[in-house]
Amino acid sequence: MTVIALLSVAPVTEEGMADEVAKAVEALEEFDVSYETNPMGTVIEAETTDELFAAAQAAHEAVDGDRVSTVLKIDDKRSSDASADQKVADVEEALGREPRGD
Image (tube, rainbow, N blue to C red; front, side, top):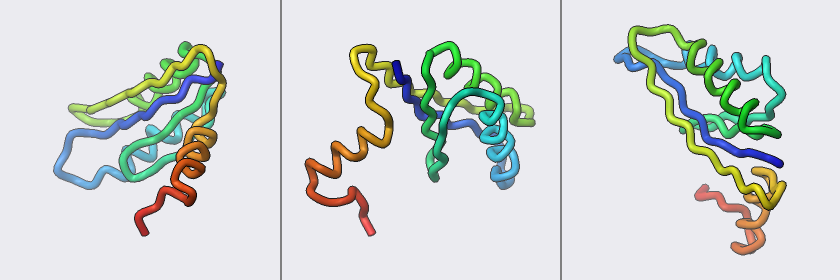
């Protein structure tokens, strides 16, 4: 089984967030997950929901701050092992091109 999630972790602050977001991303390295960071969050792939939740919790706890905002959206399609890359490839095939707005 492959579980895919979109994770966004950030301190609630008026200051820049890059250093704290980097701590959250770095925390994922301790887990058996693959991930790709984009401007709106980090897409994570894990074999189990247990591993996914543990990685998300570690990312949340890695951020310093008086207040931390975490959003986790999970796609747990139990009848398929489609990866995040495969989902993008399916959209590319349907479009007949890469899904880019450049």
